[in-house]
Image 1 (cartoon, rainbow, N blue to C red):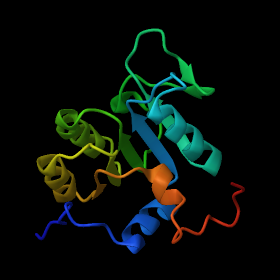
Image 2: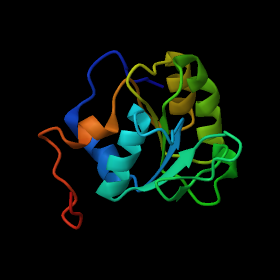
Image 3: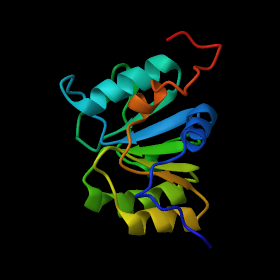
Length: 152
């Protein structure tokens, strides 16, 4: 099997295809802190029309932006298209294993989140992988044409 070279830039087509095909995104490392980057990304993706599922194991944290928080990917009660990871790079492999277990189609590591072993594991299981990128930024790049039924 040939693997993607994740050190090379991803094609616009690859990113566009992922962002236009996924609907449900579980965000591992979602934060209720409005000053955190993950909060802003969650907000924009949610407002763009994605079904966002925040993942944070903090006891007592029940919702972020009105969205129910789950303690883990395994606790989610519906199918997930994409797992977006706001964690340290060394956490990505374990998240990849969980993403495979729940049947996700895409593993997306946020800017700075790179682990080539995790990418290979996910690709071997049939997932598409993006690392070291931010979907919020990619959504607003010129190649992107918003889905026509959504207001931005």
